[in-house]
Structures are given as C-alpha cells and as structure tokens.
Image 1 (cartoon, one colour):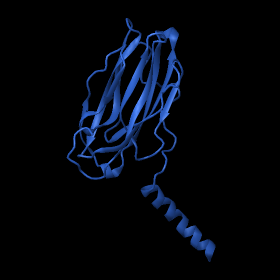
Image 2 (spheres, rainbow, N blue to C red; image 1 turned 180 degrees about the horizontal axis):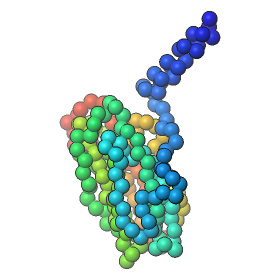
Image 3 (cartoon, rainbow, N blue to C red; image 1 turned 135 degrees about the vertical axis):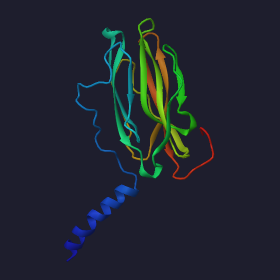
Image 4 (spheres, one colour; image 1 turned 90 degrees about the vertical axis):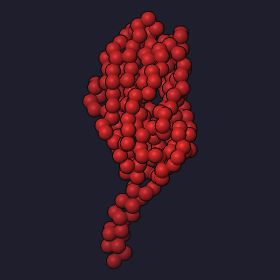
Length: 199
C-alpha cells in the first residue's frame, strides 16, 4: 500500500515543486552547434520570439578574424506570472571601443541583441532589445562574474534559475586584446504592479 501511495504522490509533488519552487532551466537549445547568429566582421540582429527572454549567451573569439566573436543566444518563455510583454523597444547604442553600463529602461528585460562590427576599432557597438511586462519591477539585482573569465577566451553564460532575468550588462574593453568582458545584470521581478521606473 505504501508503495502505491508513493507512486501516486511523487509525481504530484514533483510537478508542484517545479511550478512553485526555485528550479533550474534544462539544457539550452542553441540550435546546431555550428549555427551562429553572425559571421565574423558582420552585423547581426537577434530577437527572442514574442514573450521570451534571453537566458544564455555563447561566444567564441578569433584574433585572426579581426579580433571578433561569433555569437549565439538561447531564449525561454518568461514566467506566466509576468504575463505578456506590454511593449518592446531598442535601447540606445553602446559605442565600440568604450566601456559601458546599461540596463533596459522602464523596467524592461533583455529579449535580444543587435551589433555592428567596426574594423577601425576592432570592436562592436551593441544595442539591447528590451521588453516590459505590465508594470513589474526588478528586485534582488546582482552582477554575474566576468564572461569570458579572461580576454580572448570562449564564453558560455547561462541563467540557472527560472525566476531570474537579464536586465542589462556592463562591459570592459581591452585595447591590447581587442576584446570585451561582460558582467550581466540579473534581477528577479515582482509578481505585482509597482509604480517605479527603472529601480
């Protein structure tokens, strides 16, 4: 009898824990391993499907290709408690060859990237594609460690918990290595409307 009860209730507990507890994203589907959103020294525009946000960033560096990187991203649907995005927009451009810090304005979440390569600087300019979910506000924000760990290395950044979202990034640029290190700004989002802008 105890074994029967265990077989009945264990799947229910697992489903409930998955819906309400902090659980981890599964493996990300970047598509085919050879599939990148850009080619070296070319611009690109990547947007998640409607209602999804960026949850993973992968990149490889090649000094022989103009000190440029290939990029790939993974998206996942935002939590149902956030609802549908109420508006999406492109943020201001972050110039090539400079350090910068940017979060999505209006409490938005990162749902895409746009970039253009500049051979004169051997670097890229960047723009975030951001989406706002009703009037939800970020809280418990923090910076990830640096990606990549050292200039010129490959990078693979993943969000491991379901209710954490990328809101922006800060980057440093090495004039010697002609490469960037990224720290992503990660936050949780309230499950209720709040009146604040960009907290």
